[in-house]
Length: 381
Image (cartoon, rainbow, N blue to C red; front, side, top):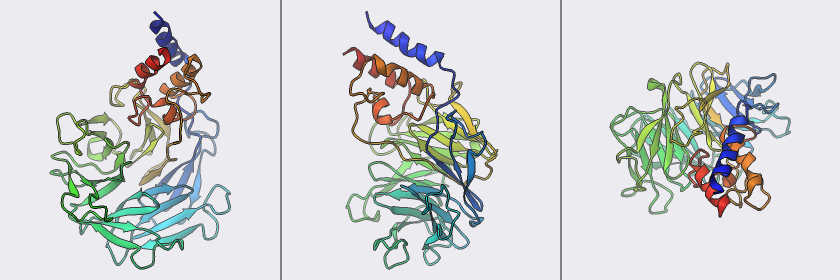
């Protein structure tokens, strides 16, 4: 008897809210040729369209600047001509890396690769990148903690046999997905079964998806969900290992997540949503509001920034982790009707980015309509 009023109350809060999107309180960084810019939603209206919400973070960078990853308060930027990795850090806490010695060369890859593509962080500050010409994955790691990776064995090959890799992503379980410019095998999965730090051993480098139009960038959300940008088709593809067998080769494990995005150029995850840069200078927020497994419905793809052409990388804040009670949206230690406004606001994208630890009821790394029945069931128990 109580179920209908509670569900109705949740949807009333969702429909009654009219704010345009969630507030992106933390900084988002985008790499473009010669510059990295920082995006901050200063007025909390859920976008970066207002005065001074897009500012330079680092300038006079190589025009070949490409992928961008974030490790705590540091940014690592991939550049070519010659191939190298730059470290950007705001040492004086003034909100940028425009001052002396705030942009330094972290690793030179001239001896290892003529060109490098893709960038990902694994574990404790291990940086992974790939050599597309020779089909090799490189690990870059500051073993002696001197602030760079120029010393012996700090840049080594840890995988081979890749076919024209374009990007890579590290899953939460430590396995690595590699996007390839190869229709027969557009995505590979690398698993260090021997625990020896590389992927050279038997069955450590396998097909993850096959016979698909290749993607350009790849993003891992959970151990079974990943997204690939497909610029040629103006879309985002979804890889979902529904059977849990370590690949996306089975029926309905590849699908369309978003479409009509002009040649997406970069992708990042932000607290249950996706940020996607497109070739027309826009950045979109994608959210599966109704829980149907895609962002194809009305209001599920919203532009939050403009005028950012040639974006080659996005680095968003890491997810909020920590012990919590799923459903305790307002963090008062209990799951009750006081949590309804916060959950409904998060579902429609009103307010700050949702704390997934408190709102992701089914543990799939997303906040959407699939979490609502579990929240109601928990509330009634």
